[in-house]
Amino acid sequence: MPGGALAATGDVDRIEAPVTVKAYLICAFASFGGIFFGYDSGYINGVTGSKVFIELVEGPGATALKGSNLSLITSILSAGTFFGAIIAGDVSDMIGRKWTVIMGCAIYIVGVIIQIAESKGLGCIVAGRLVAGLGVGFESAIVILYMSEICPKKVRGALVAGYQFCITIGILVASCVNYATQNRPDSGSYRIPIGIQFAWGLILGGGLMLLPDSPRYFVKRGRVEKARNALARLRGQPGDSEYIEAELAEIIANEEYERSIIPAGSWFTGWANCFSGSVFKSNSNLRKTILGTSLQMMQQWTGVNFIFYYSTPFLQSTGAIANPFLISLIFTLVNVCSTPISFYTVEKFGRRPLLVWGALGMLICQFLVAIIGVTVGFNKTFVNAAGDTRAINLSAVNAQVAFIAIFIFFFASTWGPGAWIVIGEIFPLPIRSRGVALSTASNWLWNTIIAVITPYMVGENEGNLKSSVFFIWGGLCTCAFVYAFFLVPETKGLSLEQVDQMMAETTPRTSAKWKPHSTFASQMGLKGDKMDLNVEDVERKGSVF
Figure 1 (cartoon, one colour):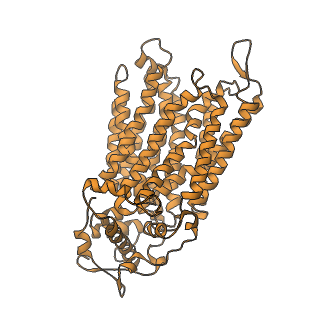
Figure 2 (tube, one colour):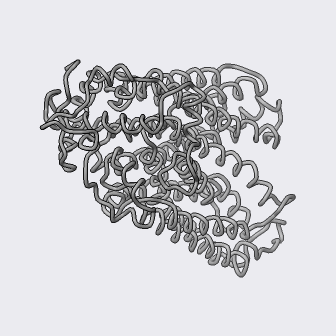
Figure 3 (cartoon, one colour):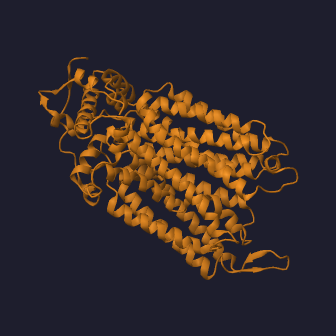
């Protein structure tokens, strides 16, 4: 209704339509993007262990990749994802959330093509993983942004947790594909695991073409009628429904309020806005940016990547683990089966309790693994007659394995999904795309740092910390526990607009008690049941930045 006033409400309980099956399905499909993240993290271990691939890179007769080549092949993807995530924030404000993810799928597919091309040496695999990394960066940042903006508030946490669940599914699929192709004598031993990635790009990119873009993106750009149509499709309601009118009015009113605090400007101003305000003010943009980036840093600090990438050879060297694939599969299955628990708990108990109690559970497990290891477990070994290193107390090592599995349970049901959920909820609309992009880039940056330094901590010719490395992860989990208790707010059951209001009026420790008391539409001024704001004004003020 160009030129007219928007119908609005002052009732905080009537700013969103009832949740429908259609809304569930649309949001659940978007979470499929987690497959990219998980599969890409998992398949490379099988490729770098392929005899055919090793000889392709190192030359005939080689039995293993050089350490420098292995490091380059493994870490180059994270370099691409870091920059891809940051670039995606701007792109999503220019062309939309949906089309940015589709673009990421296209870039990802190009990267896969380069990787499976015939090549001697590192050229194609490194270049392909760098390009694919850009695509994964686009996808990993913007899928979270897209889901947070389209999901109904009552189930937003559960649906965004589906993204983490798909990450675990991706890791599991990669493990199975690696196992199925590991003994092939031809190039299929590495080309099949790489080539399967085609499917993920085609499914996600093709499916998203049928879905609407984020109504909040349209509001930011001043396209009110497109926002109305997108919201109607997402909520399964006619465009003139009172629920659609009320929710649209609330989104617009919040955007107008935020624009009065964070004025639109140049590209540089848009980025500078992410770091404005005081670090001591809970609702400042700087505080929110630090919260988002540090949450993703803390997620990596838990040591979960060490568990998935290094624990199997780490424990295998004791002789206590006869089948490395079996222990890897057990850890992966615990990860997959534990994550769906968060679908219920994140909406029943909230984000904050999950992160606090999850960190407590993880730190207990890490310290137990470390203490058992240095006293009677992994650190106590002998050399048998055949010259092999074996654990003196196999039962103690098995206890370590059990506590590692319990640690994975705590991570997968709390910090795994919890960190992704919170970063999609805390940023105001004017800086949301860049805030989520920076937070996701932080995840990939720390992923890379930990992947690089860990071999030096546990390598026999380097730090050789053995089980003592778990003291480090336990200490970092303790930091995560303290951090979550003092700095993470509760966002359960609130619209994205209400989260802004809550953070302005409470501290993290009192946030769970906060209840919405007015709508942004009523704050902007209601005339009867209409918002005192002209649609033409909103459309005129729409901006990329």
